[in-house]
Image 1 (cartoon, rainbow, N blue to C red):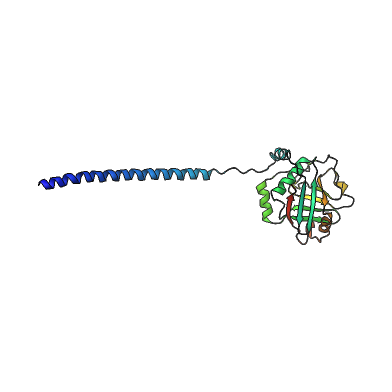
Image 2 (cartoon, rainbow, N blue to C red):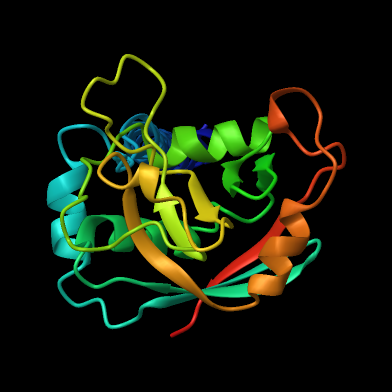
Length: 236
């Protein structure tokens, strides 16, 4: 009988100790679950609040290019096409158009676009394409136009690079920033002065421009065989 009491006394503390351990384990488990839940919630919140992507639009384009051109010390862009390469020097006194062209070249916008309009003995026009990639690049950069800047003394001499105006409801001839044309006419196409903004000139590779200007074209003056701008490089 005495032995049974001792055994019972010994077992009770062990049961109590086991119960405490079990309770402690439950608390630790609940604590871990709370921490995991807390971390999961933090991660979910971070995913649900992505950083806003900057895009150009009609309101912010001019302020953006005003700031962009302040420290711009470069003025040359080399274009490599599927028919050869040429180099453009940009005019300093048309700052928005110059800044826009350099910005787009640095963004890689022109890479993979085409010379989509060729008018013999007049112009070649580039910066567009009939693929989804070009549309996607424009969507990522933004939708905007540039005001004309036609009173800086530049004329549409042969070899001048100028910016066409947008075709959509555009009485003020705002410029389409993604495209450009190069004058091929000798000595120039001066009837364009006052309507479009010359913003640079070809300083090397005019023979390539002439070669592009001689290709066969189809409907809408689009070359029968695509002529690609493979790469536009800012000469730093």
